[in-house]
Length: 295
Image (cartoon, rainbow, N blue to C red; front, top):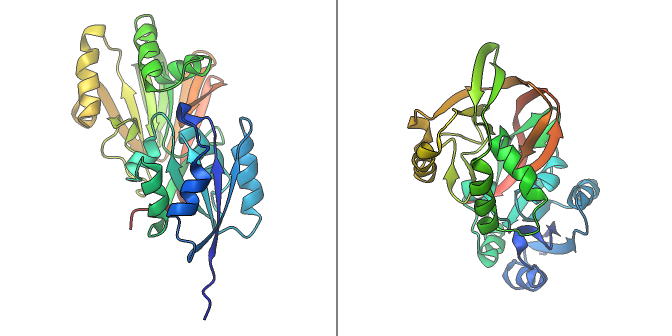
């Protein structure tokens, strides 16, 4: 008796993380269980193409759509699968891989592909900022400023990002924010504000160690104005997942967040920068995306 196979589409970003993906089709052919899956793969050709491919695939008979790339590629694909009966898979190939790390998806592409053979679908929360979807982390302040500057940088990868960060951090100034979280108002000066659905930015750098993708809440992480002398302490707390105990960071959980700032400025959604206005509205969308995770 024949067993029907799941149709699976791999959407591959050929330049994410500065790593070539030309061998991906061969790896898929070798490590994906062909008794379970009928794979098709396609490469993106420009920014936004992954979203177009995912939107088209969502209307067809694919069961699983796999984003092969970084958090930006995952965002493009996942945005088209929210509230659908399709399942998102991830083969991480970015610089930070925040969502993949949180979900314990292997960074080795061979192992990530092999995981699909035994992975279980889980329904997770997603989030929106001014109607634009994000899945791992959104933010404003220094990290959004750095993402915006880095987007125009010719050099990619973690090393270039860190080098640029050290350069920009010496001149960046904290900003005032008027924040409302589930009706409770907070006036804060902040070096950065991160809206966390998962626990980390990427590269195991944690801003909200207690965050969950399934609790129906977002964590508003307010990094207080900080001197250069205290930056090493904050960095240590982030890499040791202790920021929830830090006096340098305030974390407030909520479902509906409004933030006002003095002028239009950068924000980032899953590390991808864009310019938005003074008023920002963020909300959780509970149990809205099916995603493959560890069994």
